[in-house]
Length: 399
Image (cartoon, rainbow, N blue to C red; front, side, top):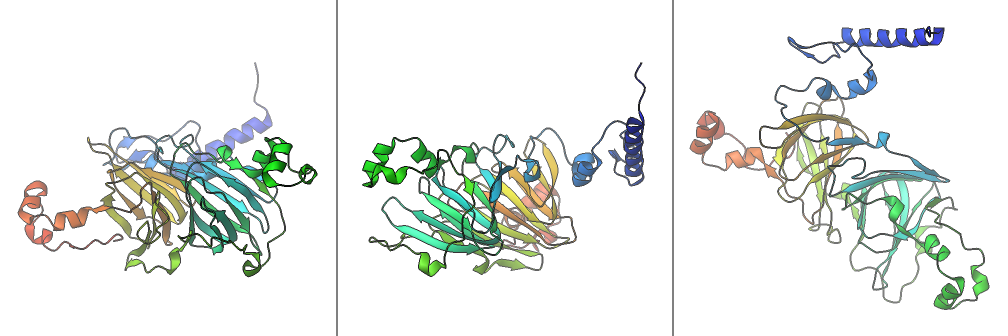
């Protein structure tokens, strides 16, 4: 017989203590006279992050797939000069229309010159970066971007990203394909490594000796010296710059504002090159919520930037499920499923809503009710007509 050693006993005691402390704090799957305390193994820290999973609202019912995955649980791909991690359909199976990459580049570090089959949409989270691209007609593009800026590279267009002093950058990338992966991009070093040098020399009209030191494999992220100032780094182009700006200054856009928060929208109407992805940057003040609504044209892929939130998704057929989110989490809502996002913390909640669509579209529950004959709504919901007549007829995204 194997007897527990001192370490095992201490571990068990700590676990029991954590369970007791959790029970005293009310962190148990108990609602009224339903449920019972957990007496087996548990992850208390994770449960504290998921109060609406541990004790679902009574309105939750039926089965819905998981609508959340955190970048904190994603594999970290670490390289000299930076790192990346991704949330794709592999990590979040419901996410068929969108995949996301979170990337960090130190000052001078470069995301290798590359391209991919999918378009690339980006939101700068922190720091500054320099981006470059050349389109299929030979127009080039170079710009510096900072926190709150967007960029968009159409599918197949080669580009690069480089961190700038003092501390480089961190950003979110989104791709309109749930199966996208950073491991499947076309990289310039990889291209050179897998073509005969004599062919490359002929193609570039150079001596083959000039290619003696080309890399033998993809670089992905690598450390380099910071580039010179932007004005001295621009390469003259005989056909001129790209016809559509690849950068959008989202924070310079006037938001839809209310006492409860604000919303900024970027889609093909004000960011014309972004034909595959529409976006909204939402800020919700404590105690308020992104109103009950749904999207008639696309699934919603969310990225939480700061604060704490809970979201209930109604999926018809008497099915609903509630999830909790915090910074670094990804949320997902299938097309036409109604939902709200409530700030349950003490600081402003900021998150992105992304859609595989050229245009942002949403349907407001309140506006729908307000613009429908009141006697018809009253007959359905048994809400007094005088209350219905006072509902707002204009859309207020944050209430």
